[in-house]
Length: 202
Image 1 (cartoon, rainbow, N blue to C red):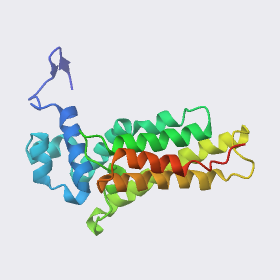
Image 2 (image 1 turned 135 degrees about the vertical axis):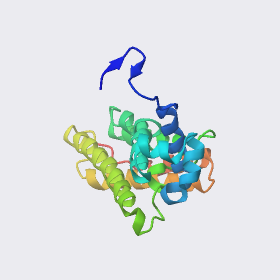
Image 3 (image 1 turned 180 degrees about the horizontal axis):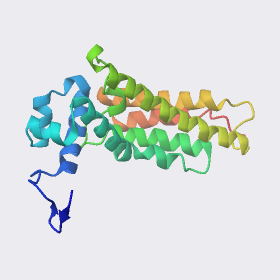
Image 4 (image 1 turned 90 degrees about the vertical axis):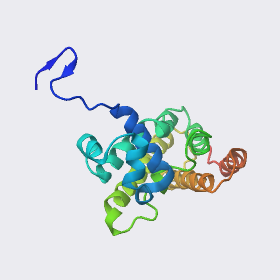
């Protein structure tokens, strides 16, 4: 399609797609996939259902886009944590990032990737599978980083990178669930600190 200086030819959408997606992400984060009704989503996004379908596809497609936004935004602490120079630094940054992100006053508490489809029925199976893959991907990235640490002599030779990765990510998801239940930031951080006291240093 040809475009002119003012944008694509044709009727403009009349809304900010980026802002609408941000609002949809917050609704899914607070209510989960099935708990987020179409009416709640479109009201929060400030658009009609027709505009939502035209811009983002169906509800599942909208959720996939919202999860991508969550991964690149609120959950971006994982990618930053993996760049820490030591395995203990990685684990510490992951848990601190989880505590920080899941207890922010201005955001829903908990984790979109954990709560999004915990109660999904058969109709939400695609989203449940998507989130399982999302969580497993995060664990795999941590495992690869811990394997590198083992190869570099930054972990005890007896350490199991896969087990450590599962341990840290399970702790992170547990923190998210506790945060969603109203447990405070200080208590969660104390728990994270206690969980890393026996870290297998070289």
